[in-house]
Length: 146
Image (cartoon, rainbow, N blue to C red):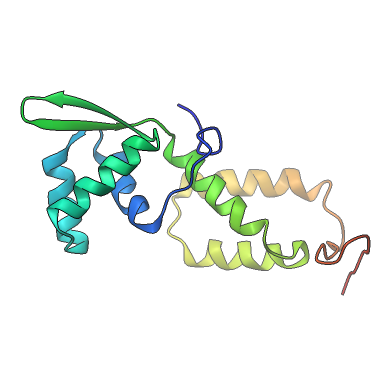
């Protein structure tokens, strides 16, 4: 599977909703996608079909025909797309405050024990080369540490 950046595409909030259902149930037929999105968002069938068509046109979904229904599979990796979206957001923030943001995300997110163990391991590795303070990157050609 390829990344969203390789597809040179973005995913709207509505498309995220559809993709989350497809990633969870794939391969999944259009009737099931419509049913799930209507239960979650109360969108019309035609709106959902348009949304699915846009995702196919963006080359993010692979449609196949089974009887009277289309069956959809993702052409992009869910975890990679989530990482790209998070990195895009973090890249807009001051480097000096990213640690605080990550701590709050960690505190507020449901995380499995196995993922927490991986986080501990990554912290151990990062700790070895982490600076005492991270400089601000908001102004060009200047280092600001507060």
